[in-house]
Length: 406
Image 1 (cartoon, one colour):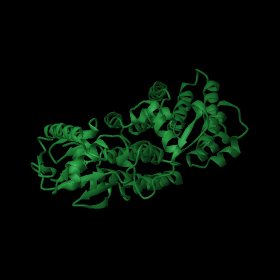
Image 2: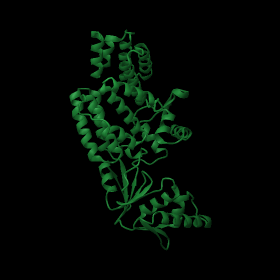
Image 3: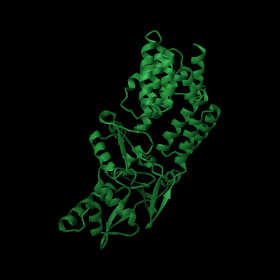
Image 4: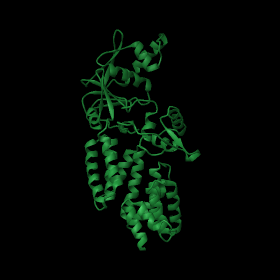
């Protein structure tokens, strides 16, 4: 490998793409194309970067499988950053196997981290943890250690294991300082901010206050009965009942939880659950049916008792009832939570991450765009969506992933 290629590679490893391009901007040989692609990716020119890396892979040819595999890994990273979640994962698997076969453990590990980050992004936490468990980061250079610890922290945050997340981020910070790459340091600092910004609201006794993730974790481990409006679950320290697919029942449970220890009138429950301003006999009859269903599904956690004017919630084991609500409650909150990461998303990638249909996501995006909450650029398959971040809040509890259930 000639001196210009070596110098450019070192500049890219240090996060300095401009210095690299000064050396290889006019190179059209395979190594030059590959390094130019990586440099363009670091500068945010993802479309150009992808084209250069594909040209490099073709130029290397079948006699240089390791170099071609590295190009595939680099292209996969661009796909992840640009939220192309439909990028063929089998290509990355094959590239990782090639790198492992030829002893390039560092790049093989990087390929594994990309797989884990994709799984984490679409909420498949069990698979992400299983893939991560196969990696030992001890022999890796500092930059790879940062990637490892950030993935550990990301999984822990989604699992609401804040102590584990803080420890992983502390290790990531030390590794980032040893790597001397400003972008890595900034990424660690950004992850730290998630722990230090409000993540939810606690509604209890007619009052509200903001909670950090650590406080949410403590709340879910307490002896209180929690009506969890982040995941549409009613839970105490021992059991949890999901009402995610029964919105009427959850609306009733939340109304009763917000009013505890008081009761809620029948007219107020009709308005809350059925979105009706005036309650007639048909509404009241339906309310009796739905309250009976709620009493049945919550029988292990609480009783729904009738009062003179309505109904009240009476926990069986817990000493208090509280409601855990999202920090910002609005329509299409989950879509906006993904867009708040600052990256541009396609509707197909959002559908994959949310586990819903692309048409459903498109309707949500169109509605949010009409309200000025998101904006798009490009046309057809190249259309991408972005949104400003939710200032002052972390979106961790808005993302669709299961919270721990005792």
